[in-house]
Each structure stands twice: as C-alpha cells, then as structure tokens.
Length: 65
Image 1 (tube, rainbow, N blue to C red):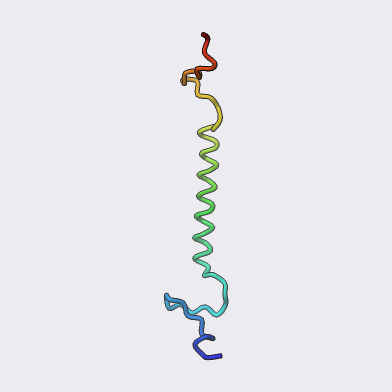
Image 2 (cartoon, helix red, strand yellow; image 1 turned 90 degrees about the vertical axis):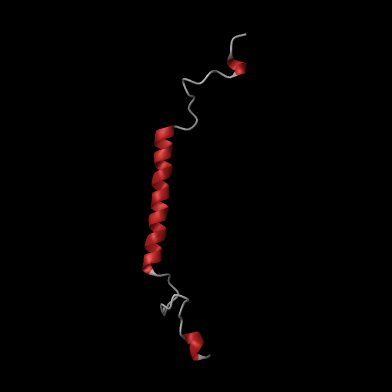
C-alpha cells in the first residue's frame, strides 16, 4: 500500500488517524438535535394541536338547520 493511502488527510488539511468524526462536529450535530427536540416540545405544549378553537365557527354539518 502506498504512503498516500496510509496518510488520512481530508480536504480541510486536518489529519485524522482514525475513522471517528471530529469532536466539534459531533457536538454540533447533538446541539442541533436538542434544539429541534425543544422546539417540537414547545410546539406541542403551546399550540395544543387537535383541540377545537373556541372562536372558530362550527362546521356546516354541526349547525342547526
């Protein structure tokens, strides 16, 4: 095997001897995931999806004829 294949240098010029992703990238991905989970939780708690709106008019099928 040639020396160029043994030397794992990525496009940014940072040498990685193992196949693990850089620690900063892992922290970034986990942070984005946690922010998305918090936004989903806030949406569920604030908007109460599925509950009828009290101000909205009743559908035509439920109106008295």
